Length: 43
Image (cartoon, rainbow, N blue to C red; front, side, top):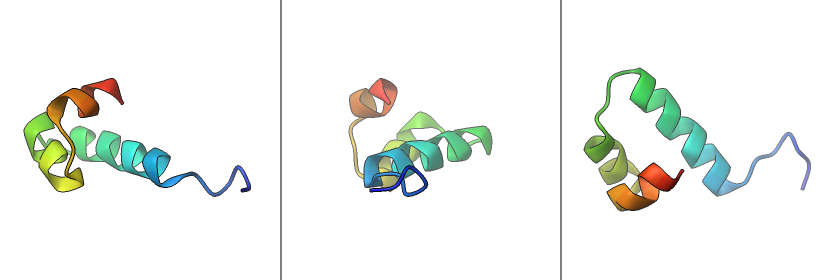
C-alpha cells in the first residue's frame, strides 16, 4: 500500500484529532468511532 493511502486505523486517528480540535469530547469521539475511551487515549 502506498504511503499516500493510510490504513483505516490511521485515518480514524487523524479524524479523531480533527474532531478533538473542533471541540468534541473524548467520550463523543469514542462513541463516533465505536472504540473504548482507553483505546482512544492510546491513539
